[in-house]
Length: 392
Image (cartoon, rainbow, N blue to C red; front, side, top):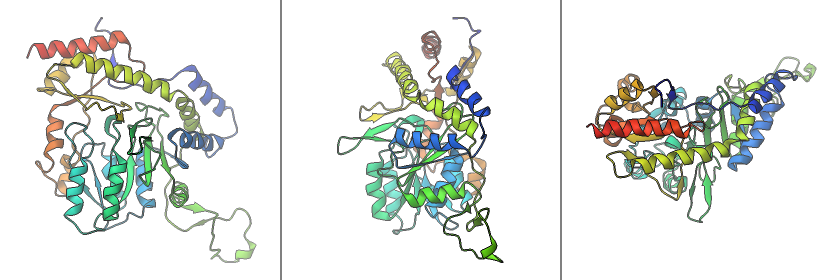
């Protein structure tokens, strides 16, 4: 293969059907706050198996409003993973809460339930308000086991499945528990950033089976404006017409547009096809690297990894990263441990606090993973990785 190829780590797949969906909305009556949003919400709720879904401007908004709906406020404490995009932790800070971390499992890269239990058991019941477990790279956290643990300590669960639409694990009843179904979590956040499974430019979703959470997030996404249960505490209240609304709680402008929802709806229709292709790519990587010095995220038949990412661990990661770029292979690093970012260091976190996360970061590199990656391109990536290792 010629080095003229440009192979990113992730890439959206926009087809003519997606373009037609957006154009159709541009020609319709609503560009925002219209019928496409409700259509997408209903379709997504059905896809993941949840009762309710609320479309939002991005995944960060879903995390923020999800925590607010769970009652997280100033002075509360939440737990999350240090290996995640910073939004998983930042959302708690937006609420005025403190962020605590539990180290990752070194094989799955998701939050370690053993470490979570240690953290919870070292504090009185009620000390932590909520936990934000992250389905990292598409690997689902076992929320059934986490729920049993959190119930002992009165901790709510907001699952961060921004990497994992379509992922699932097999629960104790031998049922597929899909990320976002919310059988065991209180709510789940998703993202529709361009490199994610469902690309909407930007966008997010919160799913839940709680009517209370659903109504809260639906109101908070639109400045807190409501026409339900109004107090009518207003001069000349009896003279107010159908235009009248109230803000009873401060909300945000976290709305998604009909344009984005139309694109996301079209993408959702082919989501399973994209996941199937991601499985093929992951299998080929696993087989190619079998027996080498490369470590990959754990493969377990009881956990269906949706493979937003394909992460490997190698020695001399920076050298491999540079070598791949020399061949127009633009791998990425996911992620710098949140507790080591300068802002979080100011909050008191230090090197050595979470050794599994830090050891992982020293070696991790994300290889190209997206449905339109061709066999030829993947062969090229594999060859360059193995050639590099053979020279070490």
